Image (cartoon, helix red, strand yellow):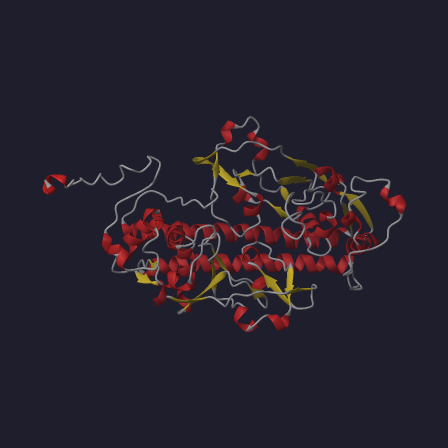
Length: 491
């Protein structure tokens, strides 16, 4: 009887009790005995896990620990102070921008071991919080500034490996491996130990050297591009503030009541900030005369909002944030054919774009000149599009005037409206006054800025070629065919 009372149940097949949309796969129990993420199921379900397994079985593959020292400074709790009163600070997002600008200054006494938070030119930076796995080089704008602890410092043990490491770490393969090693629920993280254990593909020496040379040349060109634009900015400052009058640091001022009776922003307090008014006075006093932007360009327009349809085989899509980052990877593709007026969103070389939404201390109001690398890409509607007229004003001159950190962008951002997410509107941008100087002076500034744009475009193309060559080399080692398109978390 007792024997008959025993009910021996047969286990249901694995996966039968899971919903059909649940992603799962069997994994050998042996992989649970080692590794930092051994009980995170997502680790074994990502492309990066399989790619890592394929690399680690190759005899030529080495771990990152044999190629570089990877470390991270202690967590920093900064205490902001007035601009210029403490140590300049850059966040992770700012480090990846094409034109990083200091927005925050930290109290010197409250930054422990400040020397450990500065960067060296031959390092590689890797994001380790939020969107992990992004990689950038160190440029002049990053030096002598406190850099957030949210970036891992990757220091090649042999300087000769720098170019190969940089190109390899920018590949979709390495990005996918990094994403498979992350941990955390809402905010993903990577630790130095995770990166030190990651595999580094090692093709034949001549292949690595060729890719390394192309990558390092791209970085040199990009640095030269930034220095040329800095020269153009300096030349512009000499024109608008030849006496080097210190700029106001106070925001408050008094304005005549009559000034509130006209204009679209008459009740916006920031429109009358004393520091911006001083810049306006300096610019207009130094110029021979000033003209509204609309008189110097063919058009200043904005595209309407639209419903997005993303997919793997669509047209390259660029958000405003991506356009102002350094040579970002393609993370989204849009089916432009589903829109009736897709042409108005396409990016065209030679035209200018301006970020029309965001924070006044962030990307809002920044401009850039599109180059041939942007041709055929689909741009967000969060852009104001400016079509220059070279016969009236050179594009490089307009770029320098509108985008200058002290004497340009503040004159644009003053027109922003809105609280949570301020916006700029084309009717206001058309009325921004452009100072006019001697044609030779304007030409000199335009020449520097235009050359900076061309060098930057060339650098991006070379870097893209180096990264693609590194990806192809990795694919050849592992016998993989086809292209890998890892999507970011928000794709």
